[in-house]
Image 1 (cartoon, rainbow, N blue to C red):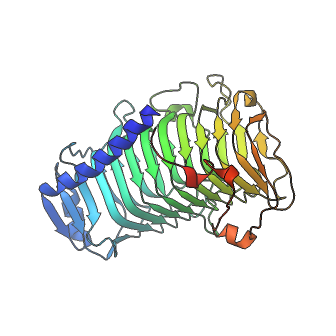
Image 2 (tube, rainbow, N blue to C red):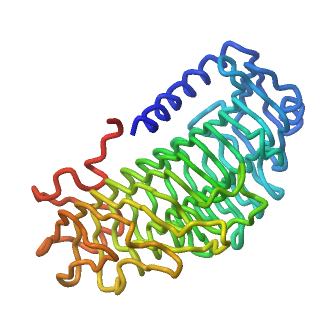
Image 3 (cartoon, one colour):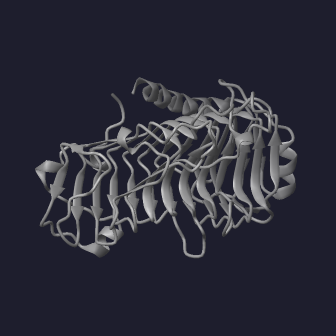
Length: 390
């Protein structure tokens, strides 16, 4: 937990740094030509302000670095009327950049990726200290491996108060990312988009906290702790897992084929979430990368979650071959079958499980996220009980 406290403190420092950047050079743009020119002249402390309006895609920054005390800020001038990026394959590509904040932006309709941030192919020198705040990315893809936000080889990052609607691959796809915070974001699936995952953490991703987010029909797997990555793409190298030390806490999940999946991962703490009406499974435990270098998917902890399900759930946990389900732990979760009283069947016994019955809940309201249960047994359980910190 101390590790995540340090992460949260870092997040606060990122916000302070972005404010400090206002003391640097202020650049104001109102059209495409001015934006292209400004992007070529960014320095530590630059604050690039975009007027409302439409801007094209295909913009890129390579080897551009701010400083901890003078970050580069690229932001919409009016948070209530953010500039719109549309047209081209992807809106913005940051390669091997550091200490950059993107804020109050809107991205729509790109067939490749919405925003792509990576290490420029230099695995030993990752991009770092990247912040996205109040960024909306919609209608990416619509099908195939096309992500709203793609992160590859990014460290010490914050994604806060962002919105993702309709994508092909993942809402946020992480490959080899470390020490990150995703909080207060919204992931909404749309018809006509393939939406494999809401958030995917793979390729050696480690030490990431996802908290207080809403996932509504956010793909086949709302959260994918792991995945299947080509060995050459791992950052910094293959170490026996796709994902390690991932925490998923205080989130609301509505719908999706499976809200939570562990896939070739080591550990992973999923706690104090509220899960409403998943379509097929509640949890998946999979070994998708079967190379001999990888240990079996193992050691996940699922506790203090509230799960409301119906008869569409015939198998509570989908356990794939080559995994170690006996190493998982289930503790003090609350379970309620909306159609009939069924206790969950889990791969290992649960300690202090809570099994609810005879609640008066409206299915349609549940699908909209409306949930009010006055039951003393739910004290300390579910997203409403989540308190960041020690």
